[in-house]
Image 1 (cartoon, rainbow, N blue to C red):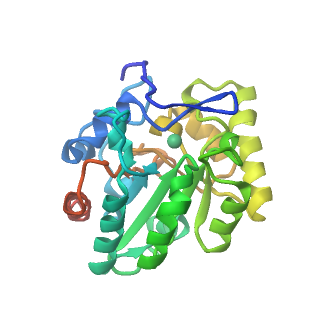
Image 2 (cartoon, rainbow, N blue to C red):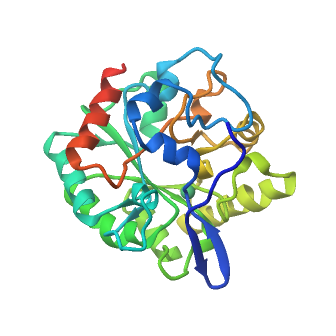
Length: 288
Ligand SMILES: [Zn+2]
């Protein structure tokens, strides 16, 4: 795992430089999902190898696909080839939610997924988990109506530094999403990768932002998503210590010692059409 992650989104908002959810690791894994599912290329574990760990299907969320979205908007000429992986055109997102609905999928919450993985709690038929990262406003203005049409509930991993800033969620929108039955998860304060945190950083990036989200929604925030999908054992230890129920990475193997804190997700590539997304989903389902 190379220690260099080229950040591709620099979003200036009110003088702040905010790093979006994009890195070389994610770029690698967003392409060729078949390889990503079984090979350690793009593993979320930073700064160490994890090849020796035995593959544990349950640790990857079993056969339940967990989708990950960022921006939902049409591409512009300024969008790079790599950025387009993370920007799902509006028509694509609409088609993806529609095909999931038409094929009889049922969205599940992280609570349902964890209860299933830990205790074998039953899930609805054709379960799928839909997650959206970084509090991008398009998820509310474009994504939410499509989720509603399909009858789906999603999980929103919110970085708090952007709240109430242009092009991002307002605090009221976060509350509304929670009140409508969606899950709000913590995604740090400003998206720095957890593998480099000092103790003070943990407070700034996780303890305080989580408390802020809890104040906004009026209930505990129990789920965390690693920025860039990257984690290391020290990070897992902190997330556990803070009492989160589970944490999500991106592609790569889950850690066999802490499977609930390294749950795998898959970025739905902006270049995919709905049929390609279904191929990925069926690939995961067959991996049972
Ligand atoms: Zn992110």
